[in-house]
Length: 325
Image: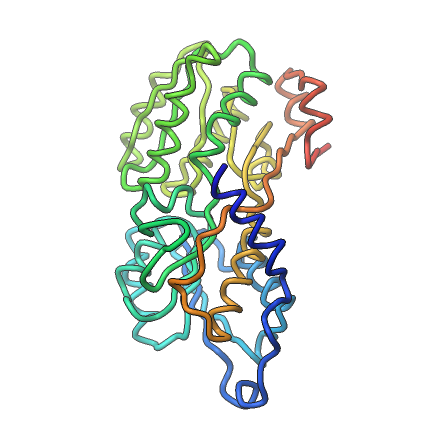
């Protein structure tokens, strides 16, 4: 939990409004242009809403002090590099990249424009930064702690679905942080008397082929990204065929999944906005350590649990940050 602790220390010591107000000269210049890059299916997603809220809290008014140029690829990760290059050529002042594929694309597109990422599960495993405390280069951001939280997700899955004996960890093959989380889950699985089957996939056909191997007593560990809509496919299996599954964000619980445990996407955007504000006010990107997500939440959908005949243990109900009736 080293990243999470570091993130909490930074938030407490610096605070959301610690940066000085813009000077008269800065206010007179054109608004800073922030290029937003993500692979989601809609232009405005929770992390972007969080970015907007965080910028406002930091005294940066959209339209007056900053403008957002949002590029999104509707789940097509192959489109991210071209979108990143377009933002760099357009001369944005900073790139805000969400998740690993978009962050990789932004890093490849420019060595000079500051980049702030969010929801990257394991930035060192993904080779996005060299060190957490000293990221170096033109990039820093907020990690969603996918590797650190993988054991807890397994524990929650086992608590809600005690009949599960084998868990499939399926992820897009080019996402190193997803791979690191899957292998961490496999490493700790014996402690929970579980077997974790790690399967990287590159095509929808590969995904379907692996899912055909599901047998009674199997469960699913959704990856921390939406690439190839793997979490969406897993959600359909849970709701349609009643396969046990655990997800990484409450978005999926709001969409009908039984349970999730992980960082809050909106809060991640707010947290990353503080880093954006510091950079726009003159801080050097390489001097800003990568932070761990400071809001981790357990979400449970009681309606879905009831429809699937699942009993949620009382200790989880008490601990839940969000209960959906």
